[in-house]
Length: 195
Image 1 (cartoon, rainbow, N blue to C red):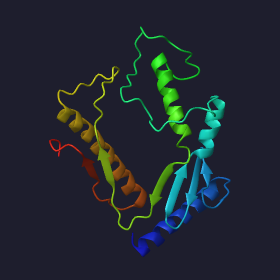
Image 2 (cartoon, rainbow, N blue to C red):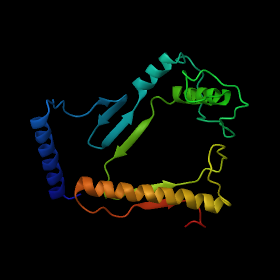
Image 3 (cartoon, helix red, strand yellow):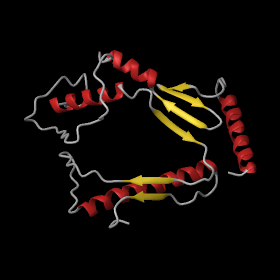
């Protein structure tokens, strides 16, 4: 981003804030530090997002603040289903029509999160502007899914197609936000047949 485009972007932000202040009662609290359970740290190098405080609050509410830690987020052979033959559990605690397997997998996720609360997302300042997407299919069978791929190549291609659709949508959104055409998004795919 050139210096003139940065100045132009800042001017648009200031104008937007002034327009909002004319229509609504607002307060400018400065740089964002916390919102919707997300801690935001802004530095010259970039932005770091984490949910350490929020995660500990959820663990307390779920009675899992002293749970066993694990480094594996999910069992590799996990098979979730809504099978009527499986034992139902109290859906007020979890989700729509939860089963025993859902509870076990949710506990596994909690155990993983307990050990990774200090992790976060780091967004560093880029030296060049480009959007990159990543695509990889998941070959585990989803019993609730009605789409069936006839080969691993077809499964990869279906997922890459969905990634491309999302990339086009994001590209158009970014073009509207910055008021300029954005470069095409590169989609990284790990399957030679699909490429």
